Image 1 (cartoon, rainbow, N blue to C red):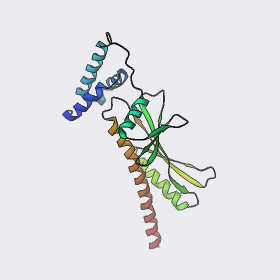
Image 2 (cartoon, helix red, strand yellow):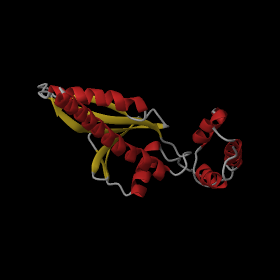
Image 3 (cartoon, rainbow, N blue to C red):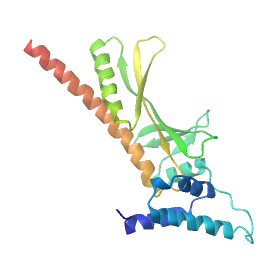
Image 4 (spheres, rainbow, N blue to C red):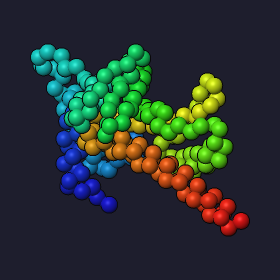
Length: 208
């Protein structure tokens, strides 16, 4: 299937903002992109090499951290840095953390900590939690993990995802918005699964 005019227009705008490393990344994996996109990238790469001579001043390519902050500003998300230099942000009244590895130019990690807490005293609830986590983790979009409190009285459930984040991605605002919204959907799906497991147990007890 040929690339649509609308998608091609989005890519034309995105390619203009790509740095040389982004362009090379795409050209290194031609099987992942349509021919017209590869042609745009090749043309952009050629233009960049031709314009290197005679340009006044030095252009500083945005870092992945710059891209994240710029995208958060476009989303209207309040954010600040914590003591570990991670980005703490507010999205739809929920607190998230974005971690950036200085040695990785293409991927970021998004975390949501302690989103669900379950008492270790409630054995049935703990069992439902484990079953629900195993069920939801099968989709592969987010990783759901858990830790126990130091006194082993509570279980804390965490959500995280490692995602590609680079200037060659069209519409970074919509892209990040999609991932953050996915966290909300997966959180709701986990709670709904636990609710269904509870209903099944209740019906089983009623029958017996």
